[in-house]
Each structure stands twice: as C-alpha cells, then as structure tokens.
Image (cartoon, rainbow, N blue to C red):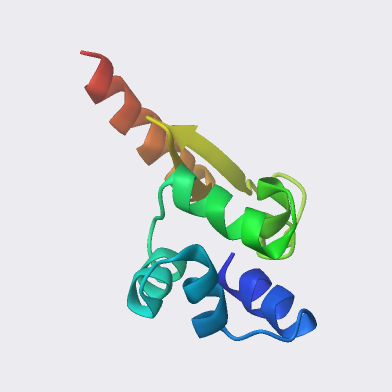
Length: 101
C-alpha cells in the first residue's frame, strides 16, 4: 500500500506531507500508518483524499507469485491484514479462533 500511495501522490503532484495536511493529521501519523497496520478508517481516509476506492490502494502492492500462492487483504475486527503466504493466513486464522473463545 505504501508504494501505491506514494505513486498516486506523485501522479497528483503532491507530497506525503501534502496528503497528511489534507487529511488533517501529522505527517508522522501518515508515515506510521503506511509502515504499519493502519485502521480501516485511516485507509478509507487516504483513499478518499487520493480520489480512489479503498481496494485500489492494494492492487499494485500485492506481489505476484506462482499458482497456489496466497495474497490478499483480510479484515479482522475491522482492521485490514495483508496476507502474503499460507503461513500468514494460518496465523491470522489461529488469532481469530483465540478471539472467539
């Protein structure tokens, strides 16, 4: 997502600082969101200010792999989780089961 946001900003002639200002958040908060696990609200806010759909922020950031690879975004408890392997999917599934106990 980070690289896609940077590319969209560049295409629109704005910096990450400009985007943060438009979003009315600190530049550091935007950087943390792009480098970490942002809330769905933050992702939606980024998408709105870039004029794209939320899912579009993830289209170029997912690695292309061989058949059988797993890549996607799963929302758990309202938070997006980027999945790049079966192991990550299993870990997320186990975490979900712990929360349902």
